[in-house]
Length: 391
Image 1 (cartoon, rainbow, N blue to C red):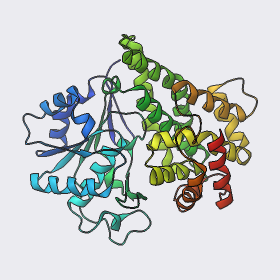
Image 2 (image 1 turned 90 degrees about the vertical axis):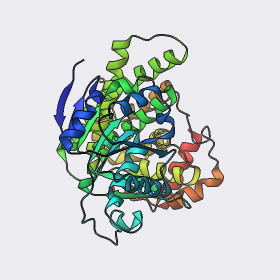
Image 3 (image 1 turned 120 degrees about the vertical axis):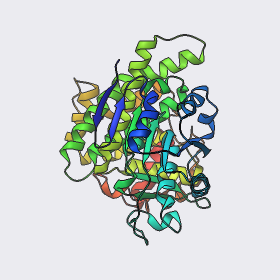
């Protein structure tokens, strides 16, 4: 597998060894005092010190104050570190959380006030100052935030998620190196992979017309169907002390890394009810976003099936060419979830009936479900959560 370049619209260098081009990329981007933004776990991995070593000719600093679902206080600490270092650009290394925190830091580097002053569709301040350049190095295949123009950050107290959006938040260059995903544990591989799948399915189903996004979503679903099981299987082998076929493992990780970016590109069309339900789970129970999406996806799709049977059939025939109806897609999602080891229900995730009312209250206020192909009211949310509890 060789390195390749494509632009959509950000420049993506894709393939094994892409991260080795970091120093050259920073020079081309004009960054001299970079700040690396990552999470606490990644900062302790051996390969991360090698990335830091690539910056020996730069005045670089690392901020590793990200963990869990990102919150405003992490962003504020990162802004303080950025300003103290007099940084002129950011290298975001990690999954969705470090990517989103990095974008929010870049925004507040030259914009005053609170982060939520700039939230999408509810802003009280304009984004009218330069945003420092970002170079992104993804280490999971889930959110695809490295090719997105938004950041999702939670309130420290309420855990409510807010979306910050601006085209300037799109990283200038992505160094997408599948070798960095080879050590991901099976559980994280599964949860992030189901996150990517949810993005792809919901983008295809979202209201409105965007044939470009639809085509990308369908190909992304195909890539997940070909590579997620293998990625999880290889991760399990490594955890058991076995040595999986390196070339096959790399192909699987590369397939999922592409699928993840395709999901993030496709969902500029919109998302849907799965994400509204998942955002509520993260708010109330601090559930990992990808895991929440994966557990909610079957129930949400059972709700949506009657609204878009033709689209469901098109997706079903990607994963099962002989499919006769859209129900085959839902059956495949359930089988895939079981194969990669996700909990089969909200109950298995530790969520009880007692929290449904709170979950519904958060979900119905979420910004994603208005794009759902079928309108969702309060009673519908109750039904979807109860279906997911009993699955």
